[in-house]
Each structure stands twice: as structure tokens, then as C-alpha cells.
Image (cartoon, rainbow over all chains, first blue to last red; front, side, top):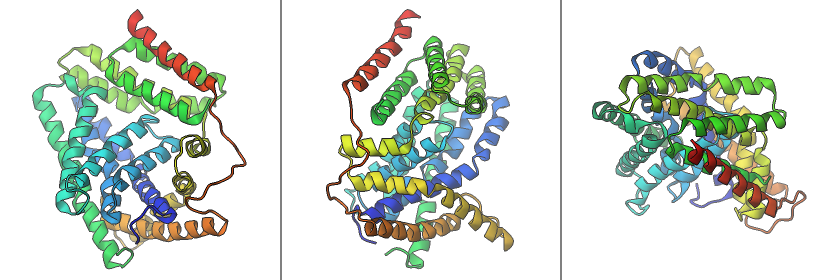
Length: 184
Length: 215
């Protein structure tokens, strides 16, 4: 697979983002079910933090497959635009979320100057994504008015979810693709 | 109104209400968005969907603030109305504009390289097939007695294999129909940006600030 922004690669990156979105969408009842279960005990935001990993999988995955600067953020934004037109829960704010989540994964690759696309970069991406999205929720979802205990709990839950979908899962998919010689 | 400017305007307002804790502001945005959608004759079914869909997450946020919020119940109501404002505000864009208009104006007026505009547009048109493909993969594995969870790498792997084939086919089809990467293009449908687009943009942006100072 050539490492450049060819028409084929652009279509493929957008398709990978949509595949991730579709897999999440097909099981989005999980998000609503979790919210319903957690609402009576006042922990509905935890549903958001538990499932966040599924939202962000496209960025690290596309980055690990294509190994080019800008791929992670492009895949997240392209996926967000498509989901916006499909009529998803968050509408236009999807684009903002896509930008923010893509930026996290992108920064992970950027810290080592886009030279390597391994576990360390994906871990860094997970840390950045957690920090950036948590800051965003600090304002957007009212996290600023929770007590310290709940915040620490939500932060840890979010990091675990983001890390699992940023590092082990994209790497496993990448390995399967390499073994099948679908990518070099 | 120009699709890209409209999207930008809606995003700016959306980001602004994320930082301002005001129930009246959210309600004003909700009311204006509702009127706009009614004028644009959006179907009643879609409007009902817009009312029902945000209820679960909005209630979740509200209850959580009532239980654990340290700033009182008002924040809960801000978040509750904000979520509805996001969804209705977003609908003023998504229910009145299509992805083609957005792609064309980004390419023609905002210098987005045509391969990006048409590449994403191509992928968008494949969404129904992707949904079928993912369902087929899950059903095929169910027939072998294997449940594919949404975190299963094999599910993504199989779907991406299909995507790799489709992307080659699609790009070849586009090239054989005369699409040349990075070459200047002529357009049948020309999109333009008028001064009125900027005027409407400024008008709504200023109007959004009014409730902040009034209430």
C-alpha cells in the first residue's frame, strides 16, 4: 500500500472510518441501555466514558494501517461528517468531537515525529485523547460540577476504554491484515 | 445559504453554548431551530424523532447532576436543555442540506483538493453496503456458532478487507470515468458564496448573544 494521499487511499481511509462507525452504530443500543441502567444511580456519564473507546477506534486504526501524518485526524473527521448526515444522536457536534478525538490520536504519532507507529505512540495517543476529551466534557457535559472522587473514577474508566481501543485492538487488526498480506 | 458557511455557523453556536451555562439561551436556540425546521417543512416524523431521541442521554445527565452535582440542580437543567439545543441546532443543518452541497462548496470555494471532496462523497454513498457487509459478517460467524462482539478484531478485519477491495474498484471506476487527481476541474453545478451568506452568518451570531445579556 503506497503511503500517499491517493484517491484510493482517501476512499479507503473514509471507508475504514465508516466501518468503525457502523460497527458502533449497530450496537449503539448498548450505550442507551447502559445509560438507562446507570441513570437511577446518577452515574449516566459513566456510560459515556465506558463506551468512548468505541467512538475513537477509527483514528488509531487508520494511523496504524497507513502510517502517514494526518491520517488519524482525517479519518475521524471524515467519519464524523458521514455520521452527521446519517442522522446520529449528536448531529453537528459530531464534527467537533471528531476533530478533538482525531487530534488526540494524531498527537500520539506526532510526539515521535511520525517516525514510528507502534505501541508507545498508540499509548501516547490514548493519553492525549483521554486528556483532550475529558477537558471538552469538563465544559460540554458539566463535568466541572462533579466532586473529585467521581471525576477520578470517570477519568480512569475513560482512559481504560480509550486505551483498549487505541492500542491492543488496532494492533491486533493490523496484525491480521499484515498476515493476510492485504497490507504491506 | 452556502452549505459550508451554514455548517461553520452552526458549529460556532454549538461550541459557544458548550461554554455558557444558560437555560434561557438554550431554550431560545431550541425555539428558533424549531421554527426554522417548520418553515423548511421538515416532516413531523423527523421532528418527533428529534424530541424522543435525546431524552435518554439528557435525563441521564440531569439525574447525575442532581445526585452528584456540587453546584446545585440548575446545572442539571442547563445540561438537559443544552443537549436538546445541540440536536435541534444540528438538525437545522443536517435536515436542510445534503452532503453533496457541502462537498461541492468545499471543493469549489474553499480549495479543498477535489480528491478529498469526491473521495469522501464516494465513501458516503457506500454506507448501505457497509451496513449489509458488517451484518453479513456477524451472521456468517453466528452460523458457525461464533458470536462476534463489537470489540472483536476479526470483525473489523473482515470488514476492512471488503473496504480494501471496494476502494480499489471505486477509484478505478472514477479514473476510468475521467477523474484525474490534482488536475483542474470544470463544474456543471457551480456553487458561489454571496455577501448575503456572510450577512446571515453575522446576523444569527449576533442574535445568539442577545439572550446572554437579557437573562
